[in-house]
Image (tube, rainbow, N blue to C red; front, side, top):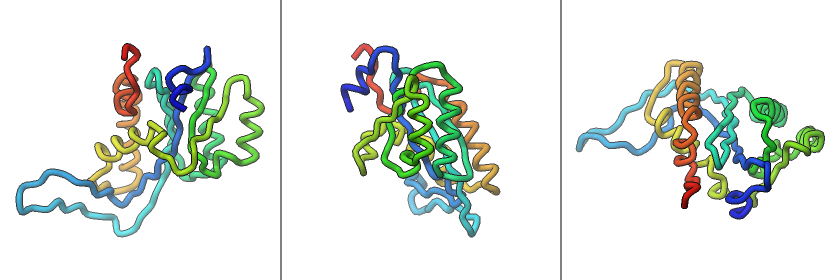
Length: 184
């Protein structure tokens, strides 16, 4: 995997993909507080959630995201189509072994686009091998942690705004995912 990540085949880009659950219930994370005080975060009383599909180019930091009400193979297929429409690059998409990535519809789509799209599956139960996990952790800690949003729509608007800001800064995205500098 390291060799593929560091030296992709000529003309191909390496993108790391994953989905992240976005819960309306606030994410509680460690934070600094005045001695003797505790952070108090209200909750909505019930949970609602959405999903964010994302892919990050390891070498450029270019990224693509999509919010969805569902996390299934139909949503994943829509994400793949959007990803391919955004670029003319040939894509090696590195991802986990989640069942939605391996349905017949997905296999047919990848076969149909084999000249531009290849899927490389990480070993099972190895999220530390997927750099986009670091991106999700940063995003959730900076945008969602210890915050209450009146509605899930308000939460998603804030999340999307931050995603757009981050996605516009390729070098920052590369730092967040731990990508090595090209001069190292």
